[in-house]
Length: 303
Image 1 (cartoon, rainbow, N blue to C red):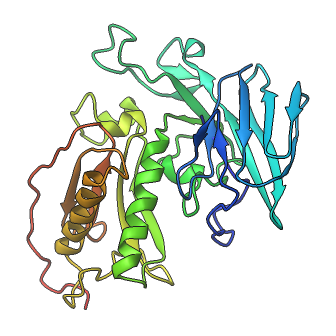
Image 2: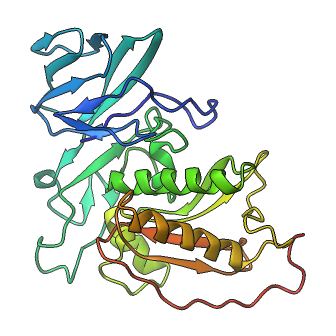
């Protein structure tokens, strides 16, 4: 399930949510501002403090000071839930995704997706896709990340569609917090590539049929300070921006996984390329994975 705050990518980064919201008895992770529910599903939201509740759609409702039960519309879309309590107002958005039964060919509403697996069955298809529009792509998935951040590649006009595993947002936010504990200058996350359709994945020459990117479970990223300069910061403080800053992030990921704070997955650091500086791949595949990458430095790294 997903909840999102309405926002645009140019909005100031909000503070972490403080009302202790849970959905159907499961607390939202720190910094999470998103959950998803299927069309017609009945959802119960609860807070740690007394609150008042409202939604922007007609729904059968039941509420108390600390909980609110509502039934979602039977069509996909983005809907608002406003929660007021403890001197603060938090506006969330309920995302109702497009069910897999709506996707019958290699396109969805003219958006090119391609085929998962070998294309002969639907066994490896995502369960559903999230519809992005120009209006909702800036909605925040978490404190530092918007819905549009996870698409990364725009195919033609809106609406766009993507799969998204929200455990990835939780993992990325946890990595940023861990970096800030040792490098307070870290301020933002730059996502290079997250969700890729199978069609786009083939176009860029990636031959992996079951890449976590295809399921919205992987991110290629770097972490930088303020103001952002589209480049990894010198996180390991060795006076140069290089692949070892990425390996420092990988080490932090492994610590978080060992503590059980994030989903286990793949993690590897990549060196400079002609297009951008060093970055890290992380995912939530469910098992630890790593692979060798080149560690060669560019002749004149940024100091």
